[in-house]
Image (cartoon, rainbow, N blue to C red; front, side, top):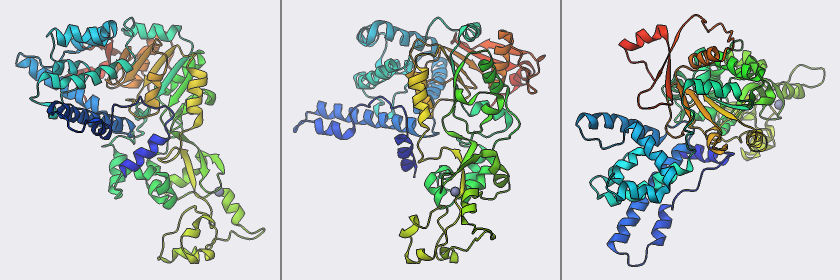
Length: 510
Ligand SMILES: [Zn+2]
């Protein structure tokens, strides 16, 4: 199931990833007829690397899985702590890693390798850690040369990423950038809506995911699979009431995006959220791309009739399956009451195919000729697995935004979901990029990381911009503590002052 879903998702991507290294089968083909032990060993290493590459690509293709490299990096950081404690660092410190990555770009890979590994200043194994890669178990105990191919993979990957711009680092740099930019791209994710209690339904461990598991779905993503929906929409509608947006509230962060527009600074808001709260906050529709669709409208899966999304909210909240008003209208004989006969397949022998027209269900069996046409089911226009992404996404990005953008701000998303995750590497690399979220990410080099609750970070930015963020969730009198994370001059942590005291006695989750 997982593979099928990933394949479908991959097929609908608007932006593609760089090609991978040789596949295992290619590596084997390339082996001579009588390979030497060395050639065999090299091939074995390449195959393992290809596996690793594939795993990375799979991880990046999947909808919600954590990044392999990010996981690795977290392991590295804890390893580093224990290594420093024992007096021998086997991995690079954050400062060292960022200096090494800068040197790689300055000198190029050949000189970089001369100055590091060839000169004996670094082992290839330790150098890998500068690129966020932990030495894999299959190379444990191997001579350092065996790490070279993995190192070259790491170097290639690093060079394909955008480099951090060294001149932007502080919170005030971020404020200045906002002040002088006039074509800002905002990328948003679930993190900007969570303060309203809207679950990030992609994250495992949240209420929605466990609810889906309790429904006995082998893969919780099935609830959002278009084929499953067409077979049986009750699965989706049994959870939809929990993700249907609160229709009268939005967060200070939504308000901030609308304020950027009011100040003539918003180019486009690419949102991964389906709650449609951007529109409510006042972000104009022509500056908004809802990359995964939204609850803003709903369409009939049979005849395509589209209505305002809110019209089906009462059905969703009551646990009813909304039917298409146009289909219902057409089924009704002129002047008479609606004619709703039982389908011939509903005698328990066979599951009724929801939304399938009589013509389409001819494969069912020979009693299909007795099938009475039924009304189509309405589906919110959120993008399900198996459905193509909106065309406007890549069109807007490539034909409109790419040449205009002067600042990128990513808010409340870990950027692990394509295609939005590809946007930042796709834009010109000299355009500054700011990241606002609870936790830093390691797979993208942002110029400035503003870490904390999005609403808190935004409140402080507005204060420094002199913008009046008038929102019921913001207390203008409350102080916000900003401190720079040790070892990272461009990483700043924002904490409300009343929360700070509590945080000092206990670890804040995430
Ligand atoms: Zn219809």
